[in-house]
Amino acid sequence: MEKKDIKSLTREKLTAAITQMGLPKFRAGQIFSWLHQKNVKTFEEMTNLPAALRTQLSEQFYIPQLKIVRKLVSRIDGTIKYLFELPDGERVESVLMHYKHGNSLCISSQAGCRMGCKFCASTIAGFTRNLVPSELLGQIAAACEDSGQRVHSIVMMGIGEPLDNFENVLDFLNLLEDEKGFGMSHRHVSLSTCGLVDKIRELAQKKLQITLSVSLHAPNNERRDQIMPVNHRYPVEELIAACKDYTRITGRRISFEYALISGVTDTDECAYQLAKLLKGMLCHVNLIPVNEIRERDYKKSSKESIRRFAGILEKHRLTVTVRRKLGADIDAACGQLRKDSAQTGR
Ligand code: SAH
Image (cartoon, rainbow, N blue to C red; front, top):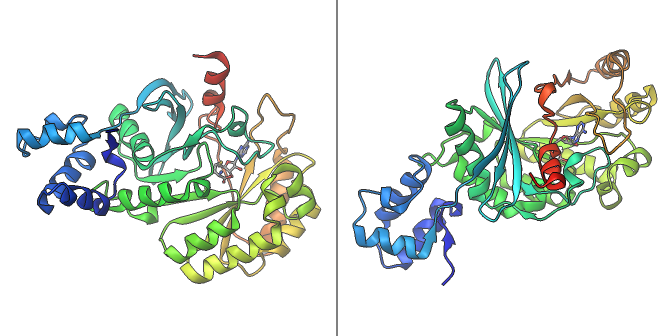
């Protein structure tokens, strides 16, 4: 029988598996706490379980581990970038950032990405597979253990499209919030999507307290089609309609990510169109000077253009921030380490 990944099971699923083995329910609680609060790496360490049970568990399940294969620390601001190896040899990255209000960890949701955004490094090395809940959680556990630091918030903005890995991401969010697990409130979680409209609608029905970030990056179909293939499937008007419904159903503000690419998305016309598109919405706009990657010739906007663009939005009463770049010396943009490691085999 193939062994099952025990750490990917929510408390409910673990309890079902344990009772199915003919064991009392409280054993599930004990095992869950060993796995998620004490972060044990073997069943042997679960010392309040009978030895026979520990053996039985190790015959049916395994506890997956992430291995750190590279670690880069920024000399500028202490940002740490990890390249992790998953049990099957796949590699993903996470970035630990320090802010005044606490530490934030940016995690990956897939090994690669199939969304194909033109400016993004994550798509270049190709898509291999979805990450399972234990691998999403494992990035947090490994970063905390290695750095000795606490993580106060999670952003799902690393490699991959979280809503393209919907079930695993939902189980991860369940495990993350479980008071007998990691115990992090969903209010400290941001999930970023390129705009999979049907999944945004499904997510709204779950009424989670997470912050939804939507990577808009262009205010009209002509421009968005050019840089984000997903727009052919879900055009701007359908995306905005779903976002409006999302804010109405959940009562939560949406954060729109907008990458400023010189001459492509940073024109005055784009700013006016964006202001019109988002008028009256419960939202926030986060402007990101595009991170230039070697494989593409997109250039980031000048400081002057960024100021101008933000000014137009503010005049239209939108709340706007410009993302501060952290870890500039370690290439902290998503997907770059995985891509380089796939290309060089290191
Ligand atoms: N797939 C999800 C989350 C991963 S990317 C999404 O699309 O939202 C996280 C954010 O970084 C997205 O807003 C993405 O569009 C943006 N991004 C990717 N490459 C970038 C680059 N080179 N410069 C600036 N932002 C980038």
